[in-house]
Image (tube, rainbow, N blue to C red; front, top):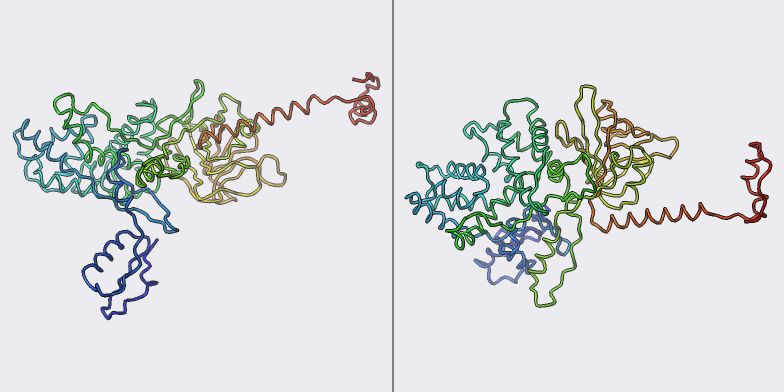
Length: 534
């Protein structure tokens, strides 16, 4: 929103400082209101700031959502970003960890053994990196961390709301050389694998495994390092922000959630198998609805990576229900249900060349009339035997036109063998198979004269970044809700009925005399035909 102080009326009491606050900034509203309480009580009261009481209550919610740094709200025409929430209370968790360290290790503080055993039992690598990162920040002289230092450093991490700082924090956390601030490919791979494991363990349909996870992680690491041995922390952070900016957020959400709520399970299950019960957190990994066994171009690990790269339009397309406070529910509870209702979407397969056949008409038949965001996965094999996989993200319905179209959420992503966000922006999609005088085929790219991706008219080959490839397979995934898919199927059924109705038209003898097909038959050498009325 920016700072709007220059547009506010200055103070007229001679103090030289304005009492106004930036619109849309909750931080400025709080500081300004506190200043009014401390002085100038005889002034006429300024207009009351917008009440955000329900937002303050979001810090304690039953859904386990720890941070709202990604949420954007529009309240009375004012967009508010990074709304402040109450800090999660981690004192009970810290106190219990210190008690277990004293009882089991005989140390007055928090030890790595207790931290891993009672806080992150399922993810020892994350526990080790998190613990020693706090140890370095606190400049501890012993192997254990004093309780006050542990609590202070954890509160600092939990208070992070800026997306860039979140990525920087966890890249530094997994850095094996903090003195030089160098990140190796193995460091980045370890961080990405932790994020992948978290997303798969809390998959909406239960824990998942993917046989191509190594291929997916190698593609990301190769895209970042390009065969180099190491990069600076700043370079890795900038690369992640540019290409897959939401890939690290599940790790932060999980850590915040456990630090804020783990004490409840520790108190009730301290002596019996701590850490085996679920945390109740839900992560935004899309669910792939597969129909029939086939070799999919988009495995689960690739879907996890693409979902972290594209806009949330592709992963949370569901519309929130209308807010209601009837039935005894509070306004904050109704607002919370509105925020958390956007669960990860189900990506449904619309078209697969391995199942429906490869061709332009097959692509159009199964893709058109789906009025929602889609992913077009194109795969081809180079002469050297290396498979190239590209994803075209369309935020709206595909239409045949001679002009480039698409909103700001359009994107072109190279998935394999090297991962990168090739291009993103509006008006970069093109599809034409019937309009004469214009290039035919499917294209993606901001430059119409030299698009990054160009699929030819016959859908048997494509050009990517100027290099030609034979087209081996295409898949189209619908990223909207179930109603969009049902609407598309209804349109297809109506088209089939209309085709059948026009096919079975009965012609009378009188109509046949002047019918053009009669003259075609006579020209073909068949002057005799049955003239019996039907």
